Length: 603
Ligand code: WTA
Image 1 (cartoon, rainbow, N blue to C red):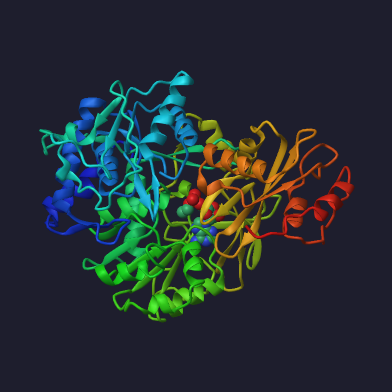
Image 2 (tube, rainbow, N blue to C red):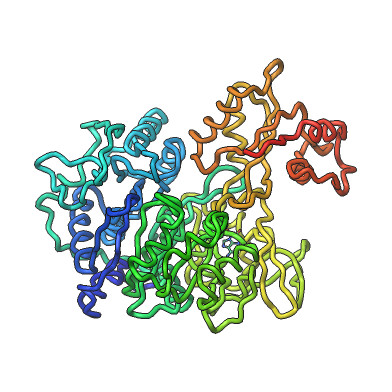
């Protein structure tokens, strides 16, 4: 589509309101963290709000600017992202569970001129003072010589001042005595005050097909997150088409994807794919376990959800509580169930299929990545015979192959590296600011192929089974984490000389973080030091990267050339004594010692 121009916001909203006459159709049923906090937004209202906010953004910046969005799961997050798109600015959404340090790193890497955030939000009973974190990030940016000029803050929990347009977002019903809302008049702007008088008419900025659409950071194996860059038309076409076919979208569906918009699943399958199809979605701010473990099914019945998309980790979490909390609700509106984020183990699949879907609903196990923009391997519901745990076959136009270590394509039943042989519309276009990293990460190991970094097996019927990452990446609750990034956070602590992090299988999270740390001479791994190390990682990266196990490692198993043998550490973490070939190990007594000192407690 090179040479053509378009605007995604126009296709998602104006076209649905004006050409398809869907103005009165609900775009989002917003369901807050607390039951009873709710809001319905139609396509017409969403268009108006996006246009108003686009005019606000236009007064603060222009086409091509990068904008960091650090917000909870509220309708205004969608408004902010689509307003960026409408004026041709590039959004970089940072998951609100990330730390100030992570936000600072991402703001600087993408050179954002504006940050949009909120005062705070609740995750279950826990208050997150988001503005406080955003301010900390902006302070860090300033110290590093990158002052961000403007920060727009939405009042989500606090009541806006008298003269603010507080009606734009109903303040949360609960009182928030611990909410702190620092205000820096040099930088901060009030979302509501800015909207006052903003016109709800805003002509979209027509952009080139290959112009950048957004940046979304994903963990990189060297530790520094990669700014995955997607472009306009290909991504639009791919998310719209995959959404329509993989969920068999019908006009009267109510669709619910439980992901956070801060991750690619939320970008592609809460905002872009569903809105492009004029779908009605549930936008949920809360947790599956709050106020109790029936919440998901209560919401399914409340809105009569027909298509439901979640992660294996959520299924495993709820499975622990048995079928009663599910069966308290009818769920008879459900038609298709989906999963994404990590391989689903057959037990969890069976539970999802029999208990949640009562064997009526096909499951679409969708394999894809931040980099791919949309689904790559997936069944089509009710058309593809399922095998529990397999993402089955490629989507239309996707050509996978399995390679061995020397890069030869394997035929028939086989296992090896999963690669794609042909480009598809939604493929990322670059790593923001570092095109050579894009080439070396995805195209260098096997020239001529896109490398997923996942292992994969193909069975005799041609079904694909993802076996997990083959780089130094861990998958904790469906979130990819870089071992190198966690290690460097640990090593920044004065008492730590060296650190190595490996995954240890976990019944709910998929993998848990097992950290080996070598301490400075004289230091001991006491309770307080462990707590400090956990805090250190939380502050550097975010709560999702909190170490589960920390083991003192006076020495780490290394090859003679000094490379840490993670394979051996993984065995130690799992207490598997069969180490395979360790002839390259420089000093095998280290391994004995590590086995003796293993962490035996469950976190
Ligand atoms: C893993 C998430 C097995 C895989 C959309 C991939 C999966 C990584 C599946 C990308 C699945 C995702 N079956 N593994 N259905 N879906 N993965 O970038 O390892 O956050 O490379 O994108 O998640 O994670 P990302």
